[in-house]
Amino acid sequence: MKKTIHATHAEGTPKNCYVHTAGTCSIPGYIRRISTAPATEGRLIFVKNGKLKIEQQNGDNITLKPGDLLIIKNKIKYLSSYDCEDYVVDFNGVTQKFSDMPLFSQQIIHLNLNSSTQEKLLVLFDSIINELQLMEFGYEFALNVKFEQILLLIYRAYYQENQITDNLNIAKIRPAILEMHNNYSQTMPLKYYAEKCNMSLSSFQHTFTKFMNITPIQYLNKIKLETAMFLLRESDLTVNEISNNLGFSDSAYFSNLFKKKYGLSPTSYREKYR
Image 1 (spheres, rainbow, N blue to C red):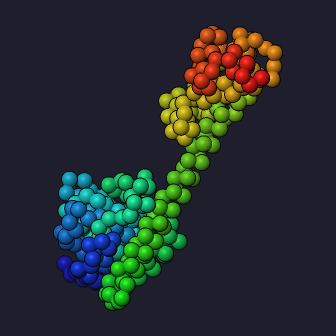
Image 2: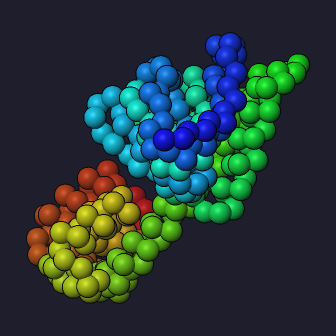
Image 3: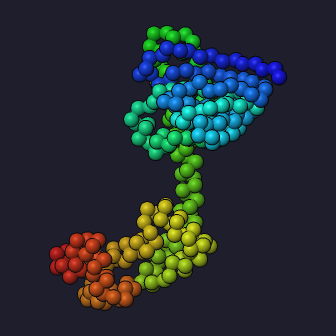
């Protein structure tokens, strides 16, 4: 089977430089090559055309299609090409500002990028390859800057994609949130709120906790306790009356929740802040 390879690589770049090698490869055949990237390095792969199958050292397989970008920190065993044209950058590491981001702490990052991001990436990849070919004065600095621009594009694409998902999930649980705020004095079973959102109980609990960073019961109690603070300051209702009005069946339980939240019993809070 006829194979053609068009690649540019530069060896011997400084150890403190992100980019170790970079190139573009085009093969119309099936078998490509055994990967040469050391296990200690990261590898960024972006597929422009065709498909690229990656077999990791641990036996897991990943298939990339056009628009897919992969950052992998595990050892790659084989790259198998299906009429693929792709860009590859091997790098030594990233600065703390990127490594601290949740996205870049993962061993494998797999994204499908929109056309605008793809076009911007292609310009940066070509620019990196050009810097490695010419090795002009200051090229190490230029490589780092361009590589960080690539990482920033990836991070923004990841963030925007997940923000949309987050907004959709918040929309799903909004009926329950509104119900809790409008009828906080009613103590309803969680299934009631799940049905308001047309969700199963388990799905509702998982989605609510994930995107509100608090369980449904904790959120409802938060609303009740904040209302209790206002009533203790502004009304003449007794602690028992406030507890009953907020839907607590046991005033002692209400007092314990209040003290745990604010460090003062309801009576002490009233004496201090009224």
